[in-house]
Amino acid sequence: MDRITLDLTNATSDAIGPDHGISSEELAGLRDAALKAQAAVEARRGADLRWMDLPYAHEVHDEVLDYASSVAGRFKNVVVLGIGGSALGNTALHAALSSPFHDLAPPAGWPRLFVLDNVDPDLVGEWLDHFDPAETLFNVISKSGGTAETMSQFLLFRERLVEVLGEEGHREHLVVTTDAEKGILREIVQREGYQSFVVPDGVGGRFSVLSPVGLLSSALVGIDIKGVLAGAASMDEHCKQASFEENPALNYACLQWLMQEKKAKNVAVTFSYSHRLRALADWYAQLLAESIGKRTSRSGDDVHKGPTPVRAVGVTDQHSQVQLYVEGPFDKWFTLLSVTQPDHAVPLPSAYPDLEGAEYLAGRDLGELFTAEREGTKVALTEAGRPNVSIVFPRVDARSVGQYLMMMELAVAVMGELYDVDAFDQPGVEAGKIAAYALMGRAGYETRRGEIEGAGPTERKTI
View 1 (cartoon, rainbow, N blue to C red):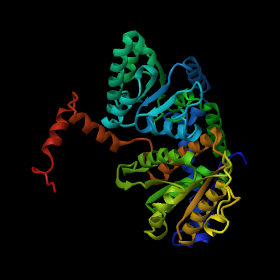
View 2 (view 1 turned 180 degrees about the horizontal axis):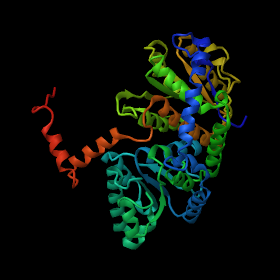
View 3 (view 1 turned 60 degrees about the vertical axis):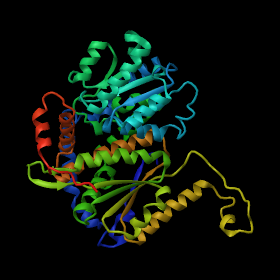
View 4 (view 1 turned 45 degrees about the vertical axis):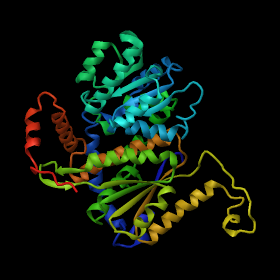
């Protein structure tokens, strides 16, 4: 099968018992609600949920590839200036579909990719200490155009470029991805004449990876974005047409809701048994947390809903987290990302035939050991009554990664309906942004600054 699959076996009551597992009756009981939720989401396709049609925006895809081709070979580095949804997808695609060592030894003619998704001065300052902005293309990404972190980085690197290349020359080193018409970045693009791409209306940051937000940096470093989009389209079509029983997005959404609401499992662990897929777990953490973690229901009642996402990497975190997972509180459920066919075969030699602790590995392959470690974790979790499902990738390639991205976006959209929250806003994030604007002295936020400074204890308690 050339499609990623969802294996629910070890999350069922048959496998781990009724206290922590989901029965076929419980899952079937959500069938009508899930189909209704899917219909509600589908009704908004092409309207305010335009992220659903991103895989089919072929003209935009060609524009991205044409630009990437026009600058091929000109830069040693590509730097993404963005945060949250303007960064996590870029990192996930690069980690999954480039060599793990791409940025140490890029293929001939291709640049390195750096995603500076923080304004920590030690991060940005170290980059400036080690790399030359004049050898770099900066991709500035902000849907609103006013994200403080992105704007501060843009101002900093623009100044460095102007110092070295001048007012005219610096422009070829900046490309902006932002709203089509609104926001300060769009105004700057119009003033400066920078090359730009559009984040369409109806595409929030955490749902933007299949727009130029995620596609441009990927194309610039040689990732097969057409393959990613084809995979996303194939998953979208499958989920539109499949029955509930054959629909991985609907079943995953139902599992998440049942695990939290019926089995008291408030922590959702994505356990990547693929080094290349590890950053997909970071991408999904934002998608889940920011979409479902809400104070109010859609009717305005205080509900304080939402699971807590956790990321783990196999086999690394078998030696740091699995002790807790197997014997700790029954407040977690697990999604293992696994790969059927790795790209590399790495045979193990024989060196100490008289030592059993080494000899049993002789003639085997690292892939066999990796698979045994993954299956061993599944056995341990299942025998301990810990629900776990597997999302199985035939291989890590552009098509399978695109399928995963679309499957999880659809699943989270349906989760919003099941949890009765707005999956497409982020008022908690906006509250933090407003507080930061006030503390930085941005005009228009003086009242909020006064409120912050006047609140809290009069004396700090420091030990």
